[in-house]
Image (tube, rainbow, N blue to C red; front, side):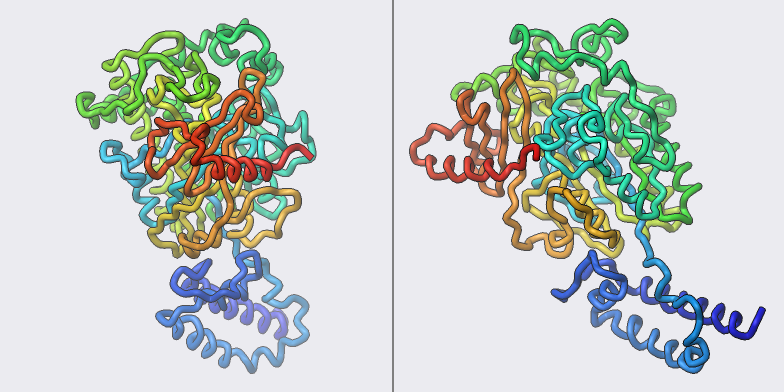
Length: 544
Ligand SMILES: [Ca+2]
């Protein structure tokens, strides 16, 4: 090795040590002070400068400066080296994106005193919990398509569980695909986009082709309004090549042991395998658990965590789905799509079903714990941004409904959302945020260039200060009975209308009416509020 090569090699080593020291003592964003000049989408030097605290001043400045002084003579000899160490790509955080299917925010960390979710609660304890996070559509495929493309369902055009977004928008760059284009290994295990509708090009490993049996299904007559009002949804009715959903979905499943035979256990096992194999590379690992989606499923030991006699029914429980007096009929579909399909739910059966949903939630929590344990074991926690998200809300007997489909009530659109960033601390924010904000947020946190054409708002300001000023409402939409329904949620109000109000509207006051039992849309005293909320709905982007 030549003298110059030896010097360059030594320099790289020394600078690597300095950068490591800086990284070790820095935080990715300034949690402990208010440096306003920090731009998370900026370069590494900006991050380091913005992260300085008094506590770490010596470690971050004095120590590296001392090492720099020792190196200064060597630097004189290296001015002509072909590649500056500063040209080294900035460190990249990994992303671990965990999804739970049909999980509403019924978690210990979200204040539920019964549900046992120690692993997710632990994650919430080291990260930021979003208390008012909302999905953009109360159905799997439209909600996930919206998030992973950073666009509203009114732009993607995906409003059912049959449509693959690339048939309408072949040019979209999905969130994992964007990370892949920026040097990440993108890894999929479990349900990320939708069952039978994966987006294979988004993944370095784990992608699957779309299933023609799913994407070639006819449009949902429930959504389009074609056919009788009570006609079955394709998800519910028997299909030529599919078993009747009523017989597969509407039941409680008890597993043996730790649930090793179940898909969700295997999804976590595959995630662990991915972590082991990709631990040395920047990765975007998406882990999509199928539970507590119907049928509620869990090992016996998780059912035993819950005394059915202590399960409370919601104050607006009904044995069958029905809009309460004073609410638009269209606000609650007459037929359930997931549980109690085409049959009444007695109070005793309802308690058993809620217990099963909780047990299924605890089962997911255990799988989350297995993945996080592996992350810790591999010492990846300090290099990995973790997102935990549910794809939409869920009715557990509220207004007699046992599903999410086509409901724009709070319980159908509100989701659990936790973001754990290395160096973070326990925080809760009450700001209204949208699932699709995660696209911008993760791009920002990882220092990637801002993509074009993406909606939503980076949540980084709220990660830095959960009480930061925030003026953005959360939108959700549905297509039901041929009518377009729109919801807008601010911190103060919740407003919904169908067919621009011609098929009904509702104004809810979350402050005084958290269970949404009283519709104020026709209250003359609330007319200014209704007008204000209607004007917010006009901000909802539509297809360009
Ligand atoms: Ca779902």
